[in-house]
Each structure stands twice: as C-alpha cells, then as structure tokens.
Length: 109
Length: 113
Image (tube, rainbow over all chains, first blue to last red):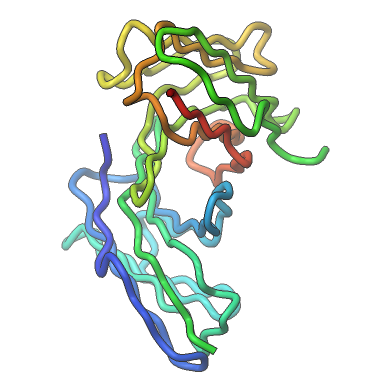
C-alpha cells in the first residue's frame, strides 16, 4: 500500500524555471524523504527532512514540511534538462518506508 | 562497495513458472527492503528485513511470494506459479537501522508471458 500522494502527477517546464512538487500523506511520520528516478532505473535519494524540521536546503533543492497539514513540498530552482525524471516522496514511520505515485517532471531545453 | 546490486536485471518467464531474484545490499547495512513498481506508479512496499529477521510483510503479498535473508547478508525474493499480473520492476533497497536514507539497486524487471 502507498502512503503519500504527489501533486501534480506531471509537470512540464522550460529550462531555468523553478519546479514545485507537493506531497500529502496520511499518518504520523519520523521523517519524509524525496527520491528521484530516471526512466527504468533505481531510485536515488535526494533529501531527508525530519518531523521536527520545517525546511531544508540542498544545492538547488528546497524541501518544506508541514506536519499539521501532513504535507511536504519539493522545489527545484533553476531547472536543467538533466532534472527530467520522476520524483517521489517517501514517508518513514517507525519501521518502514512508503512511497507515493510520483510526479513526472519534464524540463525542456 | 559498489552499492546495492540486483540480479538478474531482466527476467522473462512463462506463466506458471517460478522465479527467484537476488539482492546484495551495501555490506554495512542491516535493513533490506523489497518493493514492486509498475509503470507510472510509485514503489509498492512488499517486505523488509532487519538483519536476517523478516519484520514486516505487506498484506498485498500473496503466499506465492517468499523472501529470505539468510545470515543477514544477501536476500532472495521468490515468486511461485507466476501470473501475468506479477510483471513489474522489483526493487531492493538497503539502509542502516533507523529512519535514514535508503540506497536502491537498479531493479529486476520481470515479464511474465
């Protein structure tokens, strides 16, 4: 079963623009993580935000977490064509990690 | 250590046959996860191990599926009497104990014909 739901399901932008993806979840969490997946490949960890954190940065990535609304957002600034991929949020609760359905991001050169 | 390794990368099998996949995690990691992913969907949790103990198994996992992790090292996922609906990418991930990042393998793509 899946825990999170990403929004939008698909996003298409021009190179240089910012991309924002949202994730909503249902239960309490220890942390929330974002992963990236290129077509047909495994997932790569991008960033982890703990339940007591509200915002975190890593390079061009900015993640926010609102535990009262059970939601998170991932912002990719100054997007590049190489950012084209699917992005998934994953919620970690005690012992396991559950993923949402993902946002498919296309960055046009 | 080259990361999480999964074998084979691709498997085509006839309906009704048994298949087995292998996952070699990062050697220091004591957590190992199995997920299934179909096209356009996110990874669906199947089961996970803490060392050699299988601690949780999805209710979606029928009795045709079994996973082992002998000695807490590599893991195998076996599907018996495969069905066309089993066609998917099977992903393995490993991590340290606790709420930390997971490292994924490249997956095994199963096609049941």
